[in-house]
Image (cartoon, rainbow, N blue to C red):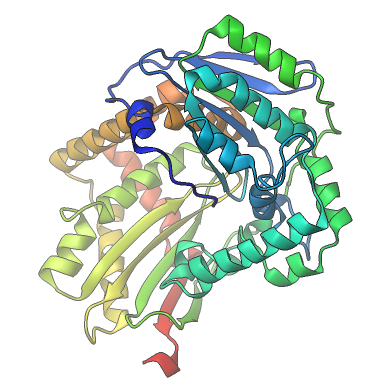
Length: 441
């Protein structure tokens, strides 16, 4: 992920106190296929311009992993009208901030500016889409940047293979490209030729594979005119053929061990393959993870950390994705606690969810948490822009920015019990011992 320091005063302008309100938006498409979403909010004089491309790590060819994430960096190198190395200087000198991020399913670029710089933001994103400079010096430079990111975030980071799933995904997916990490392998990037990077851009970065979002202090008529000016003449590319690979069900427990040079404390992990982020069951699993480990009052924390003092920390989170997801739960051992003891305690908590309804009090607390999270997710212009693009591209329903909370509200105690029984089965999971390498003990 590319990160740049934003101005403190500007950040204060970009974020305002959140409350549950309807997010109004205008949605339309240009003739070249570019999807456009506009959200007008004149509360503060700031605007976010974001472009999300429907390309992620799952779209890469075998032997060429890491391309989508690489482009997250490469497309800041410069364009025919923005000199190499000047992108961030232009943004900062105009009072703005910018960032980009990549997942298995999409890549997102954005700038947040004072609202009188909207035209600049649109021009810069049209430059990125229309004619970026992709040359060998840029590829070589960013190759080193990505290598350092991999060393920092995964290779030399404690539990990095869990956080970034590189030690998990290959067990959960045998055919689907979700088995590969977003950052890819350095061998693949080193072996790639310049023409391959250019071909990747031509295939995936056309307007008909993108969603442009403009959110904040804008005039709708003026914004539409400028969008037309900067984007309408960018030619469409051939339609992208989407990944359509089905995984065979996991029918027997996968038992494995991974080692990490950077840790001293072993961990026990259970990982389950789950449905698409669009599936209602994925929302239920989100609630289940909250029940198990969200805060010191959660079930696993109270039992394993507070009462039994067998775990230093517990974790549970759904890894939501467009085609399939993963549900990861685990615990870090306290002292000499055997990992089998941690596994037994986790299995007991799963069994409770599968056999008993959660209490009405716990259910109401859960609903309150998700109401609060929903409000906070729409508390900044940047957050709204990202949500609008995500709901459009990956969910196919922009209005989920307003309606998604109704899905959570509709989930019953019986749903939680049923989904726990459906997905959290021993014969459908990875049972992983995550250990310090012997030399580091």
